[in-house]
Image (tube, rainbow, N blue to C red; front, top):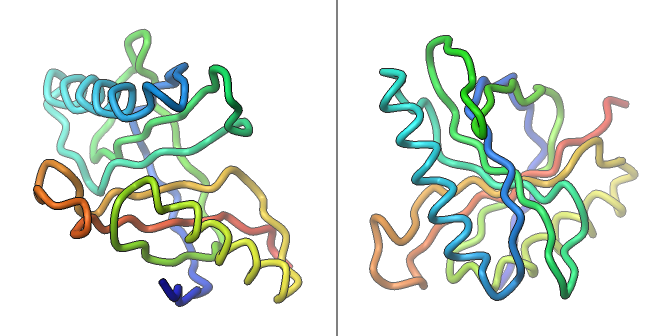
Length: 156
């Protein structure tokens, strides 16, 4: 698959957030359950999601357990309630691409973005994120999933 990489400017985004500890084997169930928890939190607080759910890897993925940060952009103000907190993702420059297909094929999108960042002399400023534009709740066939891969960049 060929990836078109674009430079974009992210807006600061208020989100409800949940950190999940998982393994490569359990990642699908952990992400699905964690996102369900975030949607339930938002619903109970009478908040409307204002964008697609997101995932970030705050630490390298290993063969053992690792942590994931799950985010659900929201409009409105609310206090977090353990284990869900409310955080604002910073705005700023970012490199982005669109991945079409199964989640287990996303590493190729990351490779393309990081190669572009290196080739264009940029520096990442935070963990990369996946924005789930179309997923299993809308599409039965994983070939039809659409995921945006975003890597925040340092300002030049």
